[in-house]
Amino acid sequence: MTEHGGQYDPRFLPRLGATALALVLGATAVHAEDIAEYMDFFEPLPYLPPIPADNSMDKAKIELGQMLFFEPRISASGVISCATCHNPALGWTDRIDRAVGHGG
Ligand code: HEC
Image 1 (cartoon, protein in one colour):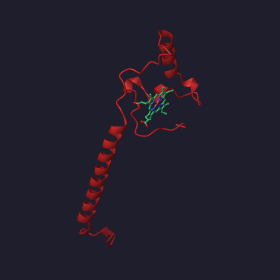
Image 2 (cartoon, protein in one colour):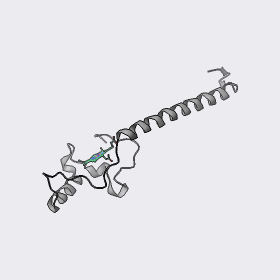
Image 3 (tube, rainbow, N blue to C red):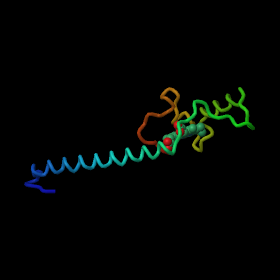
Image 4 (cartoon, rainbow, N blue to C red):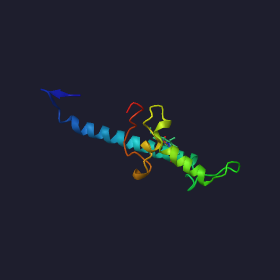
């Protein structure tokens, strides 16, 4: 970088802008290609999970699954349940950008 008396040379700014634009456009192009590749690989999830022929669904199993989903005692720390990250009130998400990690 070119500096004059602690300030950036204004002639440098257009080059900086062009470089930033090129980086953003380059990254976007790669991203779009990746998405197309992934779309070929993955399928949308079914509306309801498949039920195996040898493991039928019943009311008791559904209740057990619901209890376990909200049960923090099954985590190593005893404070995290599935619902910690998959909060039904938040569309089954936690609405945070990055995982807090096991230590919180
Ligand atoms: C610490 C946070 C956290 C906890 C606790 C957690 N999950 Fe997840 N779960 C995630 C994240 C993040 C993803 C997305 C992973 C990805 O897309 O790579 C995910 C993905 C999933 C998916 C796939 C969803 C999809 O649309 O493909 C299922 C199913 C799921 N979790 C079920 C569970 C169950 C059941 C539990 C409890 C036994 C649980 N999760 C506990 C964070 C968590």
